[in-house]
Length: 462
Ligand SMILES: *Cc1c(COP(=O)(O)O)cnc(C)c1O
Image (tube, rainbow, N blue to C red; front, side):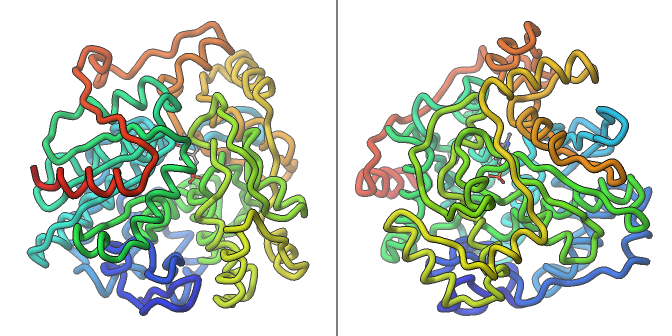
C-alpha cells in the first residue's frame, strides 16, 4: 500500500515511512492511496474472534508491505497484553438501543492507548531493523501525552518529548506524564493552550533543519498509524451487535477528529455504519462547520472535558480530502485560508460530509447532568467526554439502529468533574493507585519555538 499526502505535494511513502515521519513535508496528512474493502463474508467472519485477531484482519492490508505477517501478529499481541480487560474494548448496554464501547482499559485509562501501544511496538521493530533512532515530539491536551509516554518509555531508539498546556490538564493526566522515571521521557509544561502546543509542533515539523537534525517523528493523531489502530474497535463493536447483517451508528466525543475519522474509514471499508455523530463540548468548531456555518477558528474555552478543548481539528483535513473528491489542490487552498481564520465549505463537499456525519454540542451543564443521569438510570459512572457523547447520542438515536457511544476515558481520570456531577469519587484502578505518591519531573517552558527547539536539542539521549 502506498501513502499519499492530502495536499498532493509530498512524495508517496510506504506505511513504515509514513508512520515514522508523521506529517507530510507539504504540511499535509498521509492517507492510503486506496481504502481497502472487506467483503460482507469477511466482516461476518470477525464475529466472536479475539480482539487481536480482528485487529490483524482489519489492519493487515494497510501494513502488508512493511511488516511480515507473523511479525505484525506479534506486535499486536504485545500492544494489547497490558490491558486490564480480556475483551480489550467491551460493550455495555445503557438502555434498549444504546451501548457504550469502553475504550479505557489500557495503561493510561483512555482510548489513546489503543493506538499508542501499537505504534510503540511498530516503531521499535521498524527502528531496530533500520539501526536508527528518532526523537518523538507530541502535543497533548492531556491523554495523548500520557499514552505516548507509556508506549515509548524505556525504548532505547527513541527520545520522547511531550508538550502540554500548563495548568490545563487534570492532575491524573499530569501525573501520568510527569511520574515515569525513564531517562528518555521529557514532559514539557508550555505556557499556552493546546492549540499553541499543536501549532509549535507543526512549526517544528516545518523547520526542516531541526526536523532532520533531531530525526523528528510525530505520534499525534495526524500519524496515520494512530488512525489505523482505531479502525479496529468499530469493527469489533459492530459485529458483536450483528453487523454486517444489521446497521449500527456511532457517536464519538471529538476533538482532533482522529477517532471519528477512523470510523469513517471503517465505513468506507464496507462496515455498515448508518450515522457517525460528532459530539463536541463548547469548543464546537466541528459542530458549527457540519451545521453549515463554515470552518472558522474561535478561542479555546477551557471545559470539564479538556481532551476536547480544541479549535483546529487536525484530522478534519482528511475528511475534507474525501469530501472534495480527493482534490489535493482544493485542500491545500482551504488550509491556506485557515491560516487567516477559516473557510467556507463548498456545497458539494457539505453534501458529501452529511452523507456520513451528524453533529451536536453539549454545554457544561448538560455534560454534568448526563453524568448524573447515566449513573442513576444505567448504573454507569462515566467521564465527562463520554457524557458529552451520551448526550448527543440520545439526540440522534433511531429506534431501529443500535447506537454505540465511544467511552473515551475512565472516570477516575477526571475525578473533579465526575464528583461534582454525581457526588461519587471515582477510584483509580488498583494497578495505578500509588500515582499520587510518585515524584514528578517536568520542565515549565515558554510558548516559543526557539526555546522549545533548543531544549529538545540539548536533552536528546541524555
Ligand atoms: C483525545 C480524546 C478525545 C478526542 O479524540 P480525537 O481523536 O482528538 O477526536 C476525546 N476524549 C478523550 C478522553 C480523549 O482523550
